[in-house]
Amino acid sequence: MTPPGVITQEFRTPTAVRRGVVAGVVGNVLEWYDFALFGFFAREIGAHFFPATDPTASLLAAFGTFAAGFLMRPVGGALFGWVGDRFGRKQALIWSVLAMAFPSFFIGLLPGTETIGLAAPVLLLLFRLMQGLAVGGEYMASAVFLVEGSQPGRRGWMGSWGPLGASAGTLLGSMAGALVNRVLPPEAVMAYGWRIPFLVGLAVGLGGLAIRRHYVERVPHQAPAKSPLGEAFRQHWRTMLHLVVLIAGISVGFYTVFVYTATWLEQIGVPARTALEINSLAMAAHLFVLPAAGWASDRLGRRPVLLFGSGAFALLAYPLMSLMAQGQTGGLVLGWVALSLLLAIAGGVMPATMAELAPWRVRCTVLSVAYNIGMALLGGTTPLVAAWLVARTGVTLAPAIYLSAAAGLAFIGALLLPGTTRHSLTKEFESARFRQT
Image (cartoon, rainbow, N blue to C red; front, side):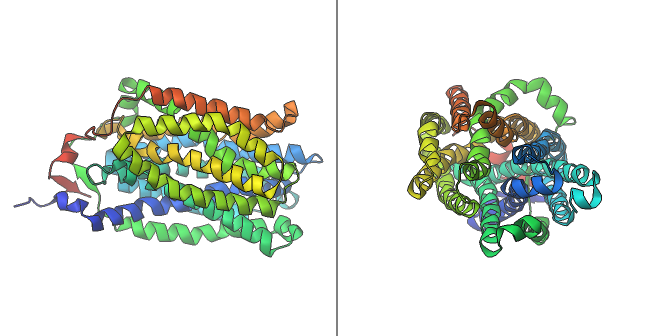
């Protein structure tokens, strides 16, 4: 007879797995919808909160605030990683979704500099830092949650739903931006239209909270680490460094392809509406490849799939962005979609790869801190660095060179991977006894 408070392997029935996917993905959709909106409406936000006679200076200030949110991601990773390792992945997911929904709503209500003066950019920065704290805890906590809840031999496929949720949220933000630009004239978008998608996010967040509160988490009978952060840095710092290198390509790639590129194309004469619509198409294609890449890694291994994805990304980033820079619709669609598919190959494999490199008792902390350090240093600064490179060098394709270099670094990280596809996440997860939370 199963003792009270213990659940069996029946927890991993297809129905339970589907519930796990929904609980893990729903928060990612919301958080990345809210987080990405800032990049899509950088020009409008810059005009309202960082007015300047030079539009480039205003845009750089807005992208600087966008990057500032990423500086809090390692802090959020450490905080919610600690919660996940000490009190369960579910608790980390519940609190992170709340920490994102309300700051985004307040950004939508915040008056501009002309109305409340210096308080406007200060409050905007504060809300952006709170967003960074939330998203720093959400992504890897949900990835760990999904991978640990997978059926045997399907960790790659199950883990791929984490980036799928993040990409779906970014797609939703892109579609919201495209819809606002299509329905409203440019003057109305600049005046108030950009605020609407931020306000809508609150309802999505509350729905995600309701779903997560009623999910049952599997927890093995293993003592959690007393100090997950300390243990992570003392015993697993090499793994954390390896993870930062490994995610370099997707860090720079995601924010180049899906956040900065729309603004980059506007600067070379492509209408905002066209750029956002093609961006939405590219991200929709991206969604289909993510689970396919995870599925392939379950059969071929994580290392070969990552080597192929990051190597192709490094080689093809420049010619594809060169094609896009010509401004023709066919070239824009082909280049943007191709870049998004290459990015998805590495992105779909990454959650399972990362989870297999860290032990259960500190897995949330190791992955969250390493992932968010990499994202803060590389991903969050990408729009700012790319805009600066173009302004400084006068080379329109400077961001493509930066993207190729980051993908090359990820290729080196993939070369150093051990074979982990058949690796046990923890002996307790291969047994039949779990605690219920």
